[in-house]
Image (cartoon, rainbow, N blue to C red; front, side, top):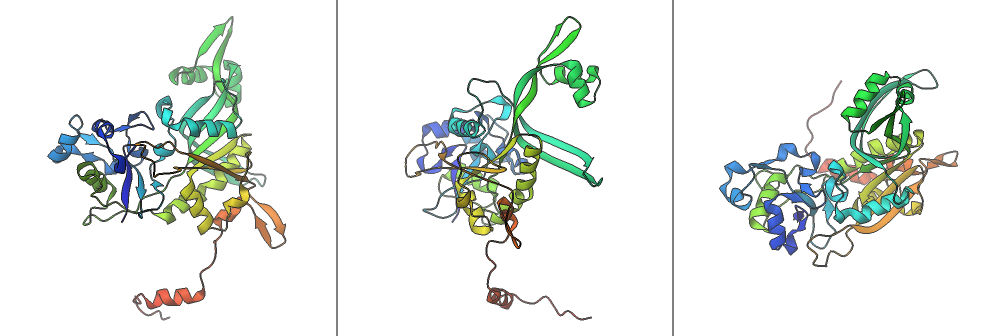
Length: 367
């Protein structure tokens, strides 16, 4: 039976007074801020005003976000991270001490220099239309989890020319968004305009299944029961297919755009998800172990030994998988990270007969 492994950052099986006090604040130690449910669970928010028992546990809030960081689907197996903040959060510019190793590993892989200033953005949307070499109109509409860039001092007029905007519009944007402007003589400068190196960071965590309201396995219900009853609760499972579908639809595109911009894209995942990718697609990640970035880059982190009794676990055990999008093998074969879109191994035909036999036909087809 699936269970919550971490609630508001703390292990349920090592719950203590510190964890209890943290929960009363609905605080996320990985954001070092109040839990936002991972940024995509707002429909699962819990209204405390209709539950006096929960209100006693968390007295200073009216509505809280679901604080489920990870799940264990079966006893003895590794936890599955289901909240992107658990893996990496740069929200609000706050850098949690609980994620120092992950930031160091990303910086090292991207060859970012120590003691240099880099800017970070979150949820950067890029929507544009352009033409390709065949004069075909193509659209691009994606949102990037995080983008890191270097910093350079640049004249306002030069920025206006690059962006095809008026100098007044650029100055207004720069002022509104907190960039530093200085004037010298007749020139105005943006002191911290973004520049190379450019690093795209994408976070991919597991999704939960919808759960069952009657069995109280929906994510919000599981959170409520864990708050009130500790380990005596049920939780939703992992939606493996949705995880794969979300990642495969973006992995190649966002890696390509990183290269087109002269930068790199790094996908930060959990080791259990990396293992699942290898098992369910034609891509064997073990063949792409690397100590340097390539066209496609997956940086996997793991819990390590969960048998320790640390109430908060810092993810470590990092592995970098990097390789080309595709490389030619022979006239009939192309390999590389493009293999993620290929089937791992087709099931035997007997399996479809068995599946059909186990299901009632919906009717007869005639024409």
